[in-house]
Length: 388
Ligand SMILES: Cc1cc2nc3c(=O)[nH]c(=O)nc-3n(C[C@H](O)[C@H](O)[C@H](O)COP(=O)(O)OP(=O)(O)OC[C@H]3O[C@@H](n4cnc5c(N)ncnc54)[C@H](O)[C@@H]3O)c2cc1C
Image 1 (cartoon, rainbow, N blue to C red):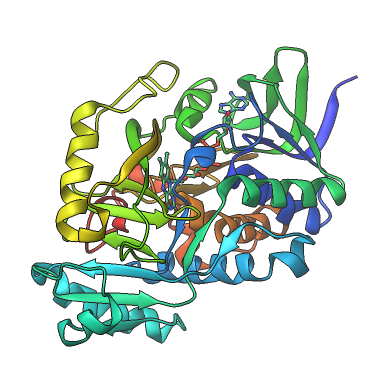
Image 2 (cartoon, rainbow, N blue to C red):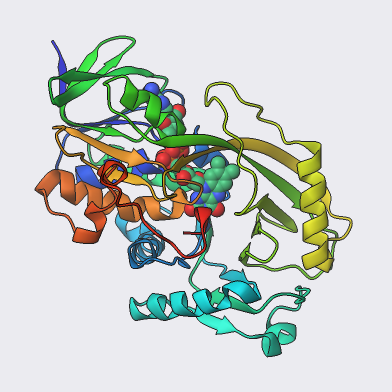
């Protein structure tokens, strides 16, 4: 007897987990198949900075919606999703300030709580900052970060409580295809059929799509992160910070500890998602130390306590691929987070669930379909890369 569901989701990162929740909330029968354990892909190692500073209305509104979903997790999911609204700064260099101001205007228009702090207020508001070369700091009091594993489990556990089936240590070998219809998946043990199959396999999505002859323009690149412990009584930010001046991001991780990584622009190295170096390079650590010490003098003599490398699944325009494709029935993408996909995943999941369950979708959201690659309709954003 074949197992039958309304929706089979491949992958239990933040994308698959949050989608499962919003689908079962709408009454659909859902199964999530995960090769490893929940959040064992990019999600588990994500810096999980939650910001709303985006340059397109679509991404900004999705980020705002995700913040609202994270804030209401206790009521909606019945548990904490690990969200900490410690605040967020976007440090803008002089050559980007005009774009930052345009973006802030758009963000405020759609209801994001954000303000610009100018150099005159740096000493009072950002006492940890060496302000040389910083033209302005956009501040979002409601943003911050989440514990990505707690967030994934919160959505998944809540989905299971409402009837979702989750199978871990269950690799999907291929999608099942009959003509123009994707009919389900083949696992090591059996076939599972469903009206809809959702590819939420993160950096492995292109390989899964290829198993049914579906093209996917995606790079898998290595992303290194470091965790540092700062000496006692040194001035450091309590907020998450995207530092576009020195291409660095930083977020607090408990008492005196910080996750620090390099942001766009930098060299992105393509790797085999099944076989890549999961430790950091020495020159990367030195580079981080130099950039951090220059910008945040309190960082001097910080101790490296942990480091690792994970994967970004980077799309043609650094925006995710979401939703069905023209000419293919019963299939939807939900992948290509491109190094900023954690925060927007819950909001995307909510809208994608509506698209799948009721066929209703906002016009701007439709544009996230992978069809945009063939149509030459890629998104244009003002900062580049995963700054969105
Ligand atoms: C180091 C790092 C820092 C980041 N920092 C941020 C940040 O600060 N803010 C932010 O918003 N985003 C950030 N991101 C990006 C964000 O974390 C990702 O976009 C997001 O977590 C991706 O979630 P996902 O569910 O799409 O993919 P994943 O978490 O990769 O999940 C995919 C899942 O699919 C499973 N899978 C794959 N193939 C199969 C198969 N064939 N069968 C069954 N299961 C399969 C995998 O095991 C995996 O668990 C960062 C990412 C990294 C790596």
